[in-house]
Length: 181
Length: 155
Image 1: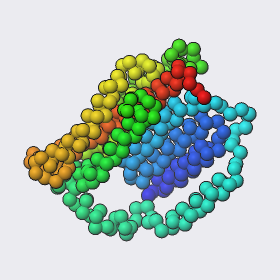
Image 2: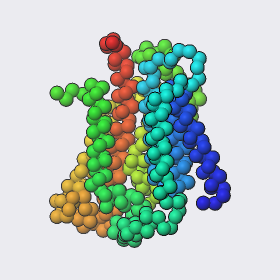
Image 3: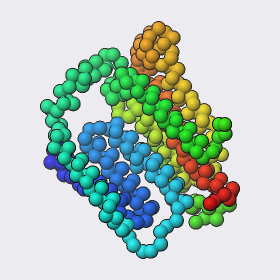
Image 4: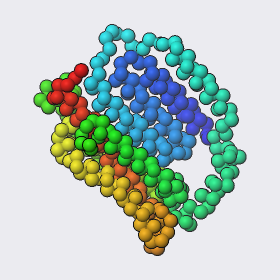
């Protein structure tokens, strides 16, 4: 990464962490939802910088867009808590659990490869080489991610599509829009 | 809160939002279709494209109210889109079996560039499922609330 990209990356990470803390601590749910949308959008930009545009598109559309709207629809029915406090009171038990979890996760960061490391397991793996060499001749598709998702791992993707379908049907059933019995 | 008769939801007509959405949503919709169709050559695919298409419709519902949007976009139509997407995907897989290949092996169809067309069709199927499910999630969550309200069965 160049210096400009590094600076941008650091700023983005700071923004993402700030937005995440805001989403966790703001007392007003509407503000928390907006902070959460900001968090998703920041993470999407981080994915772009990490050269994962497919994931970034998903995060921006689903994380920042659709879930925000669904949350907004849901809180219409809730009541705004009284009082003028801006932030939630910190509950020390859950806070300790969360801190411990973050600590455990941080210990794994050292074993992750550096960004763009040519010797990382992902870059040198036989599987990566196979897909990069054979995806285009075998499938006529230029985006290797799409080739893996829809052709090599097509059955997995069919399963994922079935999960989305099942989720949709489950909501219809829970909201009793259809009589299935 | 507005005093619209059909629900207590906070729908307020806003000229700015309505005008913006009227201008922006066709482009969002087209971009979603582009991401869906062009997933084989560039970033994106059925899932992302479907989510973008759905968000353009949700945008319309936010700007012009949910009930008018529901009248315009029939629930049954959304269900047909979802079912159509799922059966497209499954039928392409089963069709390969019928042509004597393994399940979902697009080259079994024996068309030139058959794999590519198979992938494109599958992406469109996924896009239809995702767009349809997101739109129906939105519509049903909204309707679920208003129905509860009219039933008056709040505990």
